[in-house]
Length: 265
Image 1 (cartoon, rainbow, N blue to C red):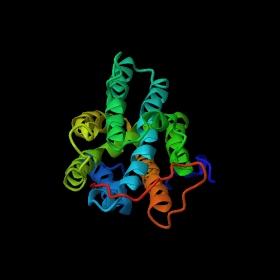
Image 2: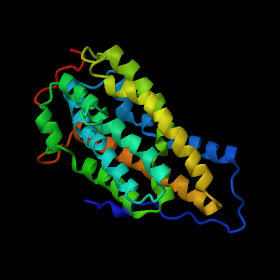
Image 3: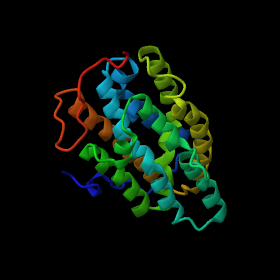
Image 4: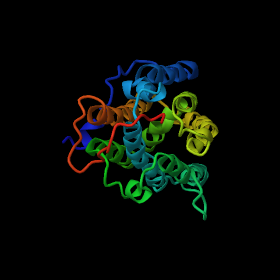
């Protein structure tokens, strides 16, 4: 199995005389990455949002995605430990609170577990992460390592896939609500809440990156960081498709569906 480090994007070869992109060009380049690479385009998501997955396949998706959700605060705290600017650190802290909640823990992770509950998953088993696909763990851990190992600019830039997130959350809410009986407000609370949170986060992150990318090389490093993040997201869906859709090769020790009852039933 490939370890995380080789997934890291290499620096683009930039002509030293190549001019910096202006603000509009830079934003357009970021948007274009989402149009070409974001995981909303993945066949697994197409199946999910169009009601084509059975109940156990949706369970497998929710269980594996939990590790990504659980790791987002790990990623953000890793980044915060490297930030010397107090204002920036305080701004970034809100992301951790969004996911973990405050003292009562009523944040995004708790809301995500409502989805797992609706899918009749054992929550202790979900939180143990014992049933994860290996590729899920490697991809997500590579993301946390990327934020720790690369420049602060690249670490913050890797979160800019949030530019594309509100659209997929809306698509998911509409699609799941239409096709699956279990997809009520309680089950979809995480995704509904994230629409507004993602917009807030991306407005700050995008402006910080635009301001702090001070050369064409910096701008290309930002784009490479976003490419890397899209690969992290895409790799997780590749693994789910291979294990639970076609050809259906589930690695030893991973979550094994008990039947193929329809997700809408």
